[in-house]
Image 1 (cartoon, rainbow, N blue to C red):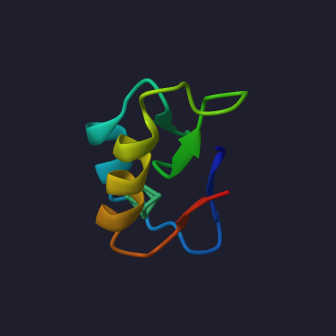
Image 2 (tube, rainbow, N blue to C red; image 1 turned 90 degrees about the horizontal axis):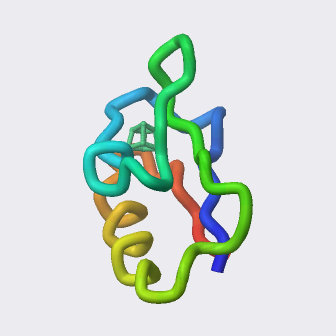
Amino acid sequence: MRVLIDADKCQGHLRCMGLAPEVFDCDDLGYGVVILTGPVPAGSEQLMRRCAANCPEQAISIR
Ligand code: SF4
């Protein structure tokens, strides 16, 4: 599983960072970015689905 943020949709609510700071951070402009460089660690899949479901802009996708 990999997690991505669509920068065109992201509005910088940072709910993602609040839920999973080990995976999401914010850039210098306050928009969400994925800091995880590889696949989502085993056991974090459910949390990633929750992050995607809680993004108000539907900017987080899971592949
Ligand atoms: S919750 Fe969604 S819109 Fe907000 S910073 Fe995270 S990815 Fe961007």
